[in-house]
Image (tube, rainbow, N blue to C red; front, side, top):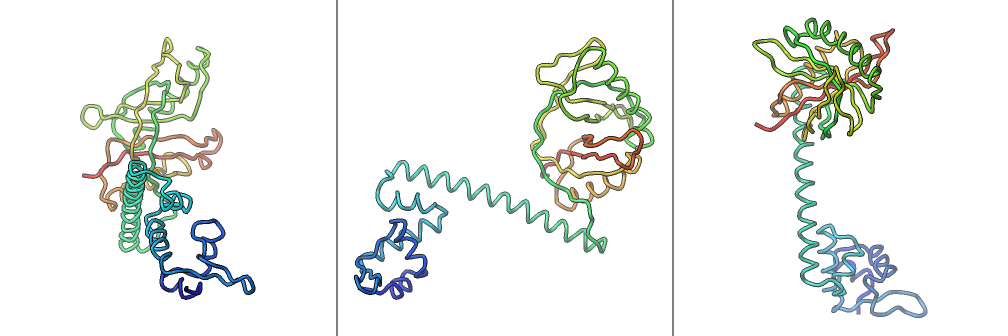
Length: 273
């Protein structure tokens, strides 16, 4: 018979953990001194402890471990549990690889620029969304060309939606497509309900989901968005990503009297080369 301390040392666990296993019925001691309350274990119990530790190291919960070691789980179910655990670990490795890339990108930015940007870039999955929209062509993607084109479009789309009795179901979204040469097709869009159909003088389209989008929040006038976009572009480049198309601009806050209170989220789809 082993004392709890000796048995814990053999099994490379703590005595506190053995007491916990006893309390939940996972590993009962072979005997308990009626006077002192000291727990004692046999050598035969070491194999059960080793299996508990091995299964716990695989990431199973103690409840799952108990079912496995007590043979409440058949071979096929155990195989399924292991496959699920493998998938969870693979997903975690993938997520950790993305985080590692982000850390390395931040380090490269600090090494280049000598400071840490106060604007954070976040990778997100953007779901598909239905929007009502109006479109026009701008000479280029430069802010000085985009602004005069898109601002009137928003006044018109709100007016036309109101005339058609269409209610917004979410936030305004601006997005862009390549035109001829340097020209850009500008879309002023407003999120609407999933069952909304096109109106007599505006289009309704479904914007596709973006499986992986680099996003950043811009605060202030859109005429000052270039610096924020540069931060986003550097992050994408330093992170080893490739941008896909132009950024979507989601309006989070709008004050017609004070552009400094505007808040937008820029979303640009990215992929690995």
